[in-house]
Image: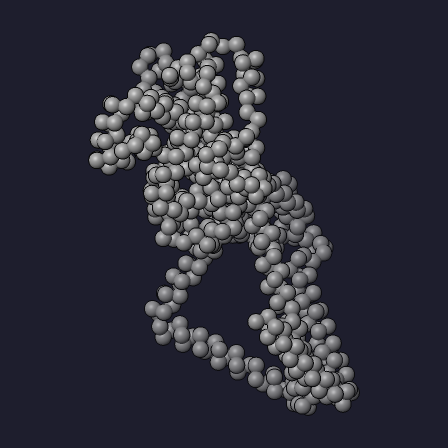
Length: 405
Length: 199
């Protein structure tokens, strides 16, 4: 075996991957050849140096910046996807609308108006009855099935919950707080309602306080005022707030949301760092023999652990604040008479608005139908044009598709 | 990290779960950074490269096939990204295997000897390490890669073969030749540093 080959094998020998035969040859050769022995010491020395090169720590900021960057890339790509979907949906939507328009106008023209509205009225009522009957039979007939439905539903809600959790973990750590001030007539029942609402939404009452602010001994009238702080799961924050507002007459409302994502990620990475430090210290402690060293290490370990606890506590607190939104409610009881003078509250307004909109829609539909009847001939002509339009769009679409392929 | 957790994280990451992706890459961050650092011997380049690697991994995670090891795949991307960048910078030049590249080495060493006033051995040691770092930089990229993976990152021969998608024999010969060339560079250019201690 040549010296050159031997020298090449030295490094494999040092890694312990030479086979038995070659290893023996090499050992023998080095015992005999001074030049190769020198090469061997050189190689040993260099590998020793290579192995002593320390690993560099990744700068603290790096991880945060990387996550930000990934966020950007992720968002821009999903935006593109959305846009693409939207773009592809546009022509479909246009065709759909056209078809809908043509279909309804055709039906309206072909059926005399009076008869049609009547038939709709006649049809709708029994249909509803049939539907409700069908529901009843399903529920009464197969209990097992209902149970499976239930579990499926709970699975669904579970998955949706975990999804929202991930959502809040991904980009947004938001602490939401709101404060409401309500005037109510029946103080005690409203308090009861609020407690029920909180319970049904899976939240809890953090604090509550009630006192009498005005009393009239002669009439035996006591007016109460109360203050409540409730915590509601953040996904139900909006609906719960709406329900609360409907319980009385809203005097004041304010909302506040604080985004703590950055601090959160920061703290998380600090915890990671501290944990690594803790492990390292423990490893060193195991090897330490001097009492002095041990005491110093113990001190340092204590410091690290206290920091760790502080940060972990902070994370826990944040998690709590993020998953449970806070709503503070100020409730004030007022005399019955005074409530009547107050303008109608939200629900009443909603109802009125709803009725108005239905009336409005009805009259405009009527006007629309009359107009259609007047322009009968023109509409038929329009339909023909539209059909030609659809046909041409189809032809063009096919051509584009052919080209694409 | 056990395989089952890793595969769950990969699955989640493929579905676009960023948290899972973060968990997945966290343990590899330091190693990727260190490979990049040794490839460029420059902190800011190494950081840029590391970021680029993870962005690539994030974008390509859907192309990752479950039967392969994630770490192998990740380090393959690392090596390829670094080599791509090195080639981009040096143009289409190729280097002969026997001749070391010409660079302006030596500046750092002089700086040290001016500023540092430590004991003799200490800065001799420092100079030797500095010489070693520079010698690594002088290696052609295919030797540099295997030396970094084997001697600085402690990958096994088989792992390196997987990462570079080449045969075990190729890895063996590249490591052996790479080390020999490294030794030659050090002995030729820095003889005075090594004569004192090793020869």
